[in-house]
Image (cartoon, rainbow, N blue to C red):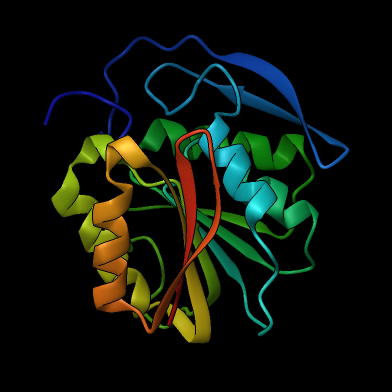
Length: 199
């Protein structure tokens, strides 16, 4: 696999940059770097997922799968009383996410390292899993994450995915419909769709 943000050890030289974003009237400070997804700031897809997400009706923690430097999980934690776990295969992203947890006083957020669900405890179950899928990792990897996510959801939990139509939204929807009880298009905008797959 060529070097990109899904690589465990990015080979690109490090050049950290910091920036501030505003979401739902609150400001958040982040550090990003080369070799991680959307290093210039919060991408439209991630923002769209954050703004579309609704807190689950059931109790239980949230999981940000493929968290990158951490914007989705950290922002969701700020508007929820839930514990949030963030996981990524990219060790540079994991280190940045941990920095950003501290920068934003995100006390209920835990960052773990692992490929797909390998960093998450086998007994851990979540009320919701959110992800902006790692398209560059390839369809097989992305679909494996969709499949494995089912086993990490609590009864009544849901997988939330944001994806661009031209990067596989129709294929993703069909795959989720094979795996989950119900799949709903929550919102669509600018070629992106947020899907909610109910376990």
